[in-house]
Structure formats: structure tokens, C-alpha cells
Image 1 (cartoon, rainbow, N blue to C red):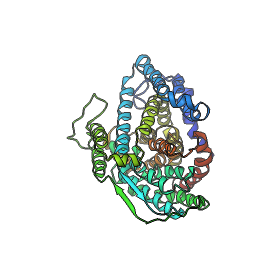
Image 2 (cartoon, helix red, strand yellow):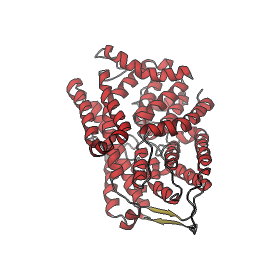
Image 3 (cartoon, rainbow, N blue to C red):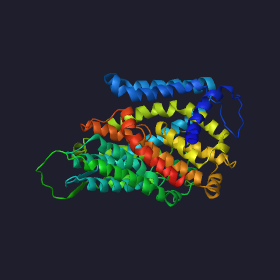
Image 4 (cartoon, rainbow, N blue to C red):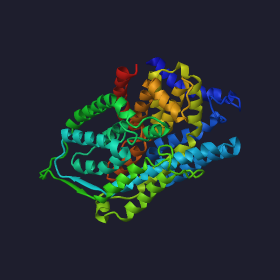
Length: 460
């Protein structure tokens, strides 16, 4: 275990030390672009540190200026790539990934925001566990973002007399992250793998027996903690009914799910809009954003306290994250492919997981998938090579897939829905833990032991 953790962190440290010595023309089988100066990782580090410290030490300044800070740091990296390296390809590729990312999140956010679910029954630890379990299963059908936006408000209302920050944290753990590990629709990393050639049903066939114990471990811990919460005494009576409003928005969610497949990489006859950094899929999703909001039931929006602040926060922060993490990902990808012969399934599990906690888990997934395929001289950009890799030795793909999804719950920035759930909860009056408190108080003591058990059982 010690050796694996050392290897995980040495991947990044080695890349920073060695990248300056790499020739400008690096071999094509290792990297197809000029490596950035290691110092260009600083904008990404600064942004992460400000996300972590801003809400604690300079909250007023951060709340008013975080969009400018995120965009400014992104511009620093973009100018370096375009002006110094002459590498616009990486910027266009990142722009395409960001637009797909935000189009999916925004469409699911607005469509689910027009649905009102009221559960008129007393909250109990057992019923909360059942609720989170159902939400985790649903995350594989409408994505972790859709399930999170659909269920976080009724979950808060249901627990109004006993709501604590841990309720939201475990909602993020289960519904917003671990729950979506069974299908490519569930979480963005798996969707990228599907677009590259991983069969759609490969995920559920190869991950279900890992998903079940991981989710059950987390829910059992939640049940124990929730059982200690007596809440506020109340004489309220409950009918036990579940009220549902906004049926037409189910159709909007269905359109979003179908549009996921409308991509030239999936259906050959779908036209590409290149060189534009978006396609027909993103146009459909953004159209749903407009139509769903304009046709939404105003009473439902009011009951949900719906506004665009949560998606706005995600959009501004992640535009900076996506751009500033380009150097970090390229350096890591280079070193991972160089040393791929030294990496086993356990190393891939911890390396992918550790970096998915702080980098966006979708590109992290792709970089380590590329490194794993490099062990067999296969190219992640060739669909037939990806399919051959799946048949050849899929233990690496299994480790990368599980880690990318599971470890997204380790921090607020590990996965897009985390920030949105946090923002909605804070607007509901719940005092959420800071970036570091989340990690120290919740993710390290709760998730790390669970993920270590998963490692021992399946990837040691």
C-alpha cells in the first residue's frame, strides 16, 4: 500500500521535475504536443487554494469576485498555450469538453428544477437510507446531476426537523457520486469511455459487484450516524403521501438522455459541426434549458426556490478549472505513459482516484485509460483499439472506472454535482462545511476506509 501511494504522488512530482528536460519534439507514441513548463501548474494550484480558503477567510470578497478570479487564471493559461506554445488544439479540445460538461449539467439542472417532489412522511434513519438508495439507482438512469437536482430539495424538506450537514454530505457521497457508477449515463468519465469505444453495458456487467458493497458500506455508516440524531420534537402528523408535480419535465429529461447518444462518435450518420467546439447534442441540451425554463410551472419553481445561482457558480469555477488543469493533466499523462510498465491495477486505482478528487474526474479517467492502453501499444483515440483493450485485460479499465467515479466524492470539486448540491443546501439555510473541513471531517474518515476495503477486495 505504501509503495502504491508513493507511486501515485510521484507521478505528478516526477512530471514537474522532468518536464523541463523533455525535448520540444517528443516521441509521437508518448505525447503528441509540446509539454508545458511545470510552472504553469501554478494557476491551477492557486485556483484550488482560493476555492478552499475563500469561503473561510475572505468570504465577502470571494462571493463577489470568484467569477473574475476563475476567468483571469484561465486566461493566463490560455494565453500561454496560444501565445507561447502555439497549441490551440488543447484549448479547443478543452473548450469542447467544457461545453459538453456545462450543457449536460445545465439541462439536467433546469429540467429537474421544474419537478416538485413532496414526501409527506416522518423522516427516520431507515427511510433516509431507502431514499438515498433509490436516488443512487436513479443516478444511473438520469445521471448523478439529474438525480441530485431532482432529489436534494425533497431530501432537505423531508428532514427539516433534524437536518444536519452530514445529511447533505452523505447525499453527495451516494447520489451525486458513487450511485452513478453503473452506466455511461451515470457519470461523465464513463460517458467519455463510451464515446471512445467501451461497450455501453460493459460498465454494469463489470462494476455492479463492486458498486453494491461500496454503496452499502457508505449507507450503513450513514444509518449509524443518523440513528444518533434525535432531531427536534414535533407533534406534526403525516399522511404518508408522495406528491409529484411537473410531469412534462420528465419528457425533457428523456430528451436529454437520448441526446447523449447523438454524437458522431456513437452514431456515424450524425453530422459533425467541427471546427465548432460543440455539436448537435449540446445544441439540443441548451435548447432544453431555454424551453424547460420558459414552460416551467412557476409555482413549482417557487416551491423549489429555483434560481440559476448554483449552476452559475459551477459554470464560472469550472471554466477556470478546466483551462488551468490542462498543464497538470498533460504532465501527468506523459509520466503515466512513460512509466506504464510499472503500473498495476492497484496503482491505477489509487492514482486515478487521488487525482479525480482534485482534478475533474472525466479527463483524469481518459489520461489513465490512455496510460493503461499504452502498456499494450494501443491508442485511446482509436475505437477498435479500445474495444481490443476491453477484451484483452479489463482489470485496468475496471480500476480506472471505479476510482474516477467513487473518488469524485472526496472533495467539492471532484464532480460537478457536488458544488451544485452544496450551493442549494446553503441557500436553504444549511451551514455546509468548508473545503478542508469536508475532507478532514467526512471524506477521509468515512470514504477512505471504504475505498481501501474496495481496493483489498478487488484490486490488490
